[in-house]
Length: 241
Image 1 (cartoon, helix red, strand yellow):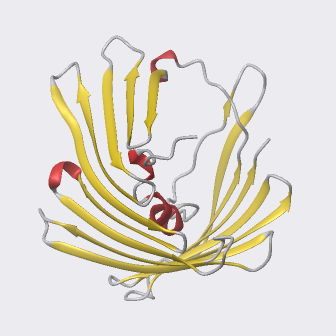
Image 2 (image 1 turned 120 degrees about the vertical axis):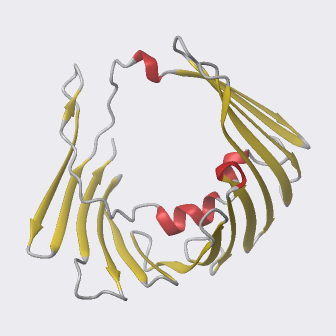
């Protein structure tokens, strides 16, 4: 196993997952999709007055969409990592990312190139610092228009509970967003999460593993500066084979 830095996609990933993963505020519904083997992905949204209830059933499936395929190569060294991904279609997009450093501190960058237009779709740079009980990262993204700094502090040795702080600045709009949040493992099967930003958006969720690989998620989101407007609530059931 490499003793070098992790992939560029891992920079800031822990904070991103804790603040965004499983928080679903989308009120749209998704039509069921079936594979030849009969496996389905379905999502149904129910609305009652000002509440939104989202019930999802998810199963792994394969869709015969050959344009979605890609070839990816990863290289790991004691002081660097490199990833190259090429879409397998007539006008392939090329993504390249690299990091240098150690498991404790690493600097990386990524770029995406569109061979059809001859333009760079994205370019991002990031820095991460990791300790056994905490991690911090700074990411300059959106072609230099957005900078994000985050800090995660683990509250237990198993890293199941954590506190998170994140600040984002978008230069084109001169807008700052500060978010604090946390996750707490009630037991080995149940986790609660909450987050609040300076714009008054409050989100919370509870996840419980009903049976192995089957997770029940109850989530809600409220704009504390406009409590008379539509709050969002949901119920998601994810079944992973």
